[in-house]
Image 1 (tube, rainbow, N blue to C red):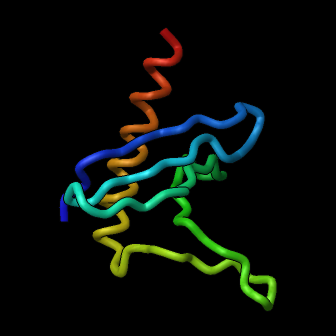
Image 2: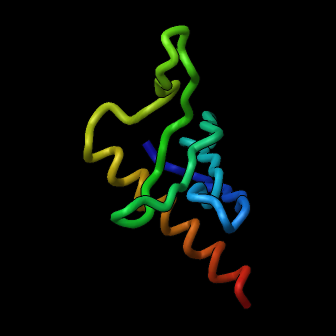
Length: 89
């Protein structure tokens, strides 16, 4: 699996949610609405989710193991930081 594109859309600065990201996998599959969130321990990603009938939010798409999640999070956060640096110039 190769992440072939990462698109970052910044959101309001006064929110804990800092950006919404779309990734393309192997130039053939896109996952939209991955959120970059500022938490107590720094930035992290939240996968796209939907509210279920019991009121809980459940991920629509997500990595199956922690190694894949870490790779995905690092790629997304690097792209977010690059976009943030470009915007500040």
